[in-house]
Image 1 (cartoon, rainbow, N blue to C red):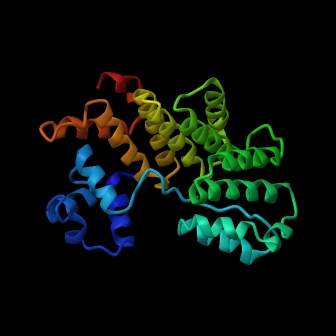
Image 2: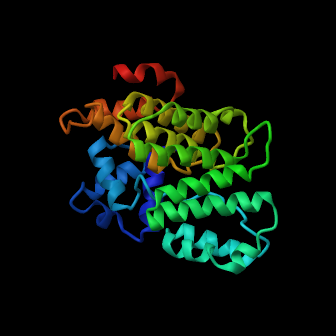
Length: 278
């Protein structure tokens, strides 16, 4: 799926008209052309529209949530709080004795500690506790030949937090990234797998390894669209715009066409090796 429908859906979800979304950014006619894939926005324009529509690098919600226990109402509450990004409330909820008592097996334990880590990272801004709970999530995982989706998510999340703390991709962080991505294209598809590519790219973006970040984004976009999904594309395109700027290709209001071609070319896997030369 191209970026136009993603922006259109985000605008409609935000309850904005085209005129409201485009105000002080571009003309309504241009936004209409973008939404109908008749015009490819340059990096600066894409970033401005993403910011207006609330499509950010950090606000990631799972496509499909995981059960943390036997009670349906508890599982629904977790999904509701995550979808609303109410992480402080999620942290409080997960610490209730009744919630903990509802956990019945290893898969639910793994999910519980994963959500607890997310709540601590996003709500309490406690990176150390988040890391510890991700390790508990991984320790609760069933050992299988092909890692389950939640194991991959915990691995890449642990790598992301470690990167934020150390500000460099250490061998241990690289190992977690590799483990999260290993065999992903052959795994049974789940839309949450799209997150793995995005977070891996975000790690390398923070480490200023921009060409590797771009490669992973291109791979992620191909992986997503090959499965007829649009989940995480908006965030992927937003980060791609940031990467393009960092590579010196988003400077140009004067060179919008070249940047448009960059985005268009990155939709196909054949351009992976060409990206560093763009």
